[in-house]
Image (cartoon, rainbow, N blue to C red):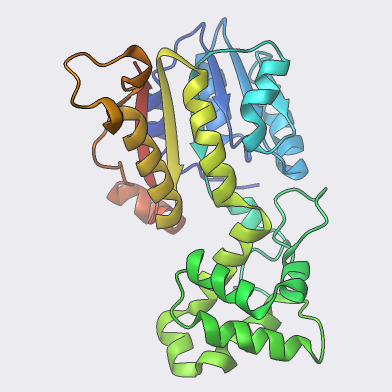
Length: 306
């Protein structure tokens, strides 16, 4: 199975891995980043999270051939802090988030891609009952319009939402091609082929099905609180919505609280807890872009606990 870890060299360097450190790969996927981390740990430990059963099983086979200083946790990363605390882990040296959908997930018959005709699913965790089909069947026109606009930033969200609701009065929407045809018919062929709204709509549905943005907003403060002094948090995002959340969270924790900013001496609890390592996000090199077109939207941000 071919999997390409975007910005891996930069991410691993950003973690500043110590041989005896404790590290967390919050998005195990198909073990690309986890393998690189595990190879650098001699006396430490790697904890790797993924809710996708296929990814966890595949990664187990990869990692056990590298070493035994790891533990895979079949959980959504939103539970990262509580799961680590259950294992007696209160502080770690570094955490990596490589967000978005992995290449194998896109290439599997999971309905993530609009490029092939597949059953609409889009679940990262197959244990969940709620999938893309259920969303398209149960969301109101207003709810569809909202997620298409907020998560997909699609200008013609209202037209597409109305077309979906009209179509499902006759039959359920089951296949990716079926959804693409509905989108095309609602916005017209010229707009469809010029701007490709199906990309944005599929992204919006995937984000909603897997509650990706809510989970990211919840987990980042937990991840920051888990870091030891000098510990690093590295996050790779793949679209502006994710990047905005990461950027704003890092900004909040790296500045003095405005409530006390005018005081001659800032109380300890109001002082910044993070130092931003790269003011501008790191983006893929020309070589990486040439090797993997899916990396073109990636941005990497690094912070350090102070």
